[in-house]
Figure 1: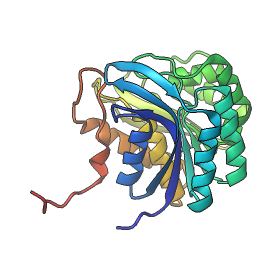
Figure 2: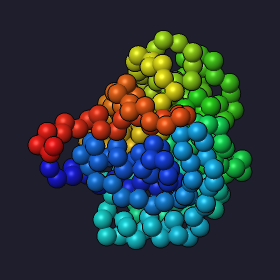
Figure 3: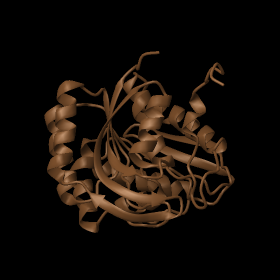
Amino acid sequence: MKPRTKILIIAGSDSSGGAGIQADIKTITALGSYAMTAITAVTSQNTTGVKSILAIPAKDISRQIEFTSKDIKPDAIKIGMLHSTDVINAVFNSLKKINVKKVILDPVMVAKGGTKLIDSSSIEILKSNLIKRASLITPNIPEAEILSKTKIFSKDDMIKAAKILINSGAKNVLIKGGHLKSNLIEDIFLSKNEVSVFKNKKFITKNTHGTGCTLSSAIATYYSCGKTLKKSCEMAIKYVNHAIGSGPNFGKGHGPINHLGAINIKKKFK
């Protein structure tokens, strides 16, 4: 099996393997594409929380993006953790240089355990330039509340927040509904022309570490292969739901999901 497309991931590293660059690589590989990376930060963490964050200098992030892309041109880019204004500006400038059209932005702001991963001034820079450059942004409800400066208590509130983000310059928005209390998860996809609601069963589990990273990488992979953004979101959501439902139950806290759910491994190795 040869990789179908090439994806460049710009995100932070998760030493526990459940989120960040590690989750991105696993997802892209499991879905049949080739993953490249530009690491923005190195975290020391496990399923119970984040112990430390080591920021990579902005110039070194730009070098990773540009030097990698000069040799192997990405078909799509997935962006995750960006921790400062310097990093956001550096990524924005590098994206202009390499000129890749398909960009999925997961505006990572807070870790599952509650640790803040981005400073307040960076959020405004993110909104003023990088969000406008992305093909799609994939905030969860707390992130959508921060970006839209509105509170979300319902599906209607999610649609309202998504419209605010569209009006402020976002091309397409997928707001993830996992934080609402209900038996179903309703994810809202909104473009300038349509609103779509993806409904799926909600799994009662604490093991959902890395779902946002995984979802955005899956969307980037499907989108790079020629699917529409809406179809890419639909397929990626199904992949993530299966990964949650078949999770390995590792760790004492917020454990990882099962990125191998899309692979049928031949049992010839025993």
